[in-house]
View (cartoon, one colour):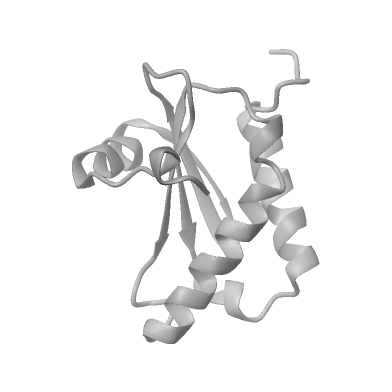
Length: 115
């Protein structure tokens, strides 16, 4: 994931969490809100409830990797946050992909979907 595509400012992340829409899965939460840019920005978050530093970093790596599978098919102009939940450490990667796919489809952010 390119550095320019990351959502890094705390104010932007708070705005997505407070004003944006979100959808939950047992292993992750996807939140989004339109931005005024021509690209998507993403923040990957894993809190202490996920585990220690090693587990949190593992969870974030899994989420980034899974998100890259869908990145090209998304409409541009959104700030997204992916929040890891504790089950992300135990579920198979294929289940993580299925969960992320279902959340993305619920957001209707895919290019080929009609609103």
